[in-house]
Image 1 (cartoon, rainbow over the protein chains, first blue to last red):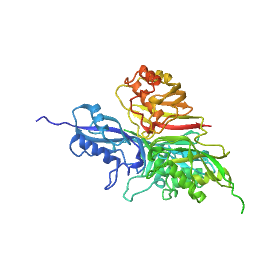
Image 2 (image 1 turned 60 degrees about the vertical axis):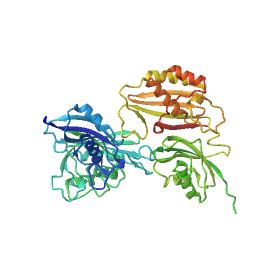
Image 3 (image 1 turned 90 degrees about the vertical axis):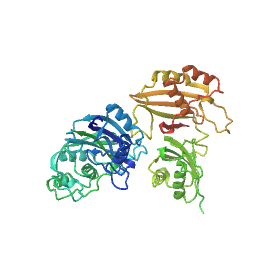
Image 4 (image 1 turned 45 degrees about the vertical axis):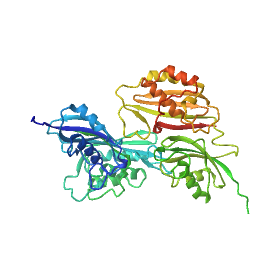
Length: 251
Length: 251
C-alpha cells in the first residue's frame, strides 16, 4: 500500500456569526467550528479537528478567521477548496485554502490581529441590525472626545481593566495596541483595532469604554486611570457582539 | 363629548423581508403588515387596518414602502412616529410619518415605483446572502449582452410575458418601463427599474430573463419576441426574492 502523506492545510474563512453560538465547539451548541468539522468529516471519511486562530463569541463575525487542520489529500488545494464549499451553511464562506509547513499553527503562530467594530449613530437600519451596533439617542455621541481617548489607548499597556476573565487565565495582560483608528462615513463609524494579540472581550470592552466617553459617562482621565492601575476596570458594559468583525490574522 | 377628528396618516417604511411571509396579511403567516397593525392596535386601543402601495413577496425587501391608515391622534406626527417605533421588530423601520388629505391612497394614488435588484457574480458573501442574488458559475455573465437586452425592454410594452398571474387579473398588462439601468461596482450589479406600475413578479421575471441572456440561454431576439407576442412567456425562472428592494413609490 502506498504511504498516505498527511498535509497541514491553512484556511481563511468568513462568517456571519449572528445565528451561531460562537467559533468554538461546545456541547449542545451550534458553533462555526462544528459546521466546518462536519463538512471535513464527510470529505475525509473520518473526524477532522480544526484549530482556529482564537475563538470569537456568539454573534461576532469574521472576514478573515484562520484555521488549520491535518489531512491526507492528493488532489491539490483548489479541489479541496471546492469540496469544502459544498453543503456548508451559506453564513460560512471558505475564502482560501493552501498547504503549509507542519510548523504552522493557526493559534500559536499568530503575530497580530485586526478587528473592526461598526457603530451607527441614529435610527436603526433594518439591513444593518445584524452587523452594527446602532446607538439611538437624542444627543449625538461626542466623537472628538472618543478620538482623543482612542489615542490614549494606543500603544503598549496592561489592558486588564479592559477585558473579561474566565478565572483560569494566568498569562500577561500586557498587549501592544498598534492601531485604533476611526474611519467615518456620515453616521457610520468604523473603529479599526490592531494588536499583537487581544485579551478576552478586549475589543468589545474598549469599544464600550469609548462609547461611554462619547456619552460623557467616562472621561479621558478615567481611561488613563484604568490603563495605569490594572486593578480598576472600565465598569461599563462591553459593546454588543454584532458590531465586531475579526478582519485579519498575521503570521 | 368632543368630536374625535380622524386623520389619514401616510407612512414610509423599510424592512428586511428575509424572515417574513411577505407584506400582506395571510392567515397563519407572519406578514410585515401584521407586525405594523399589531403595534398600531396597541397605540390606538382598537384594530387599525393599514393599506400598502402594493404587496411584496416573501423574502423581498423595502427601503421605501408606503402605507396609509386612518386614526384619531392629537399629538402630532413626531410623537406618533416615536410611538410606532417602540416594540416593532428590528427588521422593520418606520422612516416617515405625516398627515395627508383624505384623498390620498397609498395604492390607488401611486403614479410610479422604483425597484432595485442586487446581483453578485462569484463566490457567495456571507454578509450579502440575505440581500443579493449570488450567481456562482465558472463562466462570468455576459453583462454587455444583458445591457443591450435591458435597452430593448425599456419603454411601453405589454409585459404579460414577464409576469406571473394569479388567474383573477383582468386589467391591462401594458406598462411603461421608464428606466432599466445598471449601476456596476466590480462584481456587484445593481439593476434599477422604474415604471408607472409593475405586474405581479414583473421585476423578478425581467431579472431572470436578463440573467438568462447573460448566461447565453436567451437571445435579444427571444426578448423581442416575448415583448411583441404577449402569449409567449420568458420561460425562465424568476430571479429569487432576496435581491429585490422596493426603493420608492411616487404619488
